[in-house]
Length: 190
Image: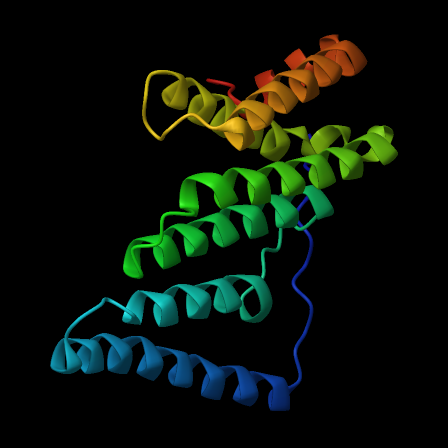
């Protein structure tokens, strides 16, 4: 039996790029260590979270990119989650009260964008449906939890929940049995 390797071969990097990435890595590590220490000595708000999280986002998005799940839907989903976490951190650190209003709107706009990526090229993006399904599940869970009181139910959360249900039904109608096949691929037990 012949086994085909389906993972992409990593691209060969030049020695100069390796040195640049090594320097960037140590600068990032130094920043991640120095920011919390400085924050401890200065005190007050936990602003070092606002330094550490974007460094992590830059590291995972630009410096150390994914090799396998590197497609528009997966990368956009990852970016959406990173942006929402950063907005939660900003809302938490500075004690703003706009998080419950702004975060669902940002999430909704990215969810619609990712759905457009999916619907514009269904035949090719069919295998990349799982990140979209996870985002829909997260938004339905957020909508359900706001229905019982946390976070506060407002119109952006209602719109997010309704649009998520619509996108889910559209995916079910378009994909039909292929959606079940993709779920079986992702959650097989053999």
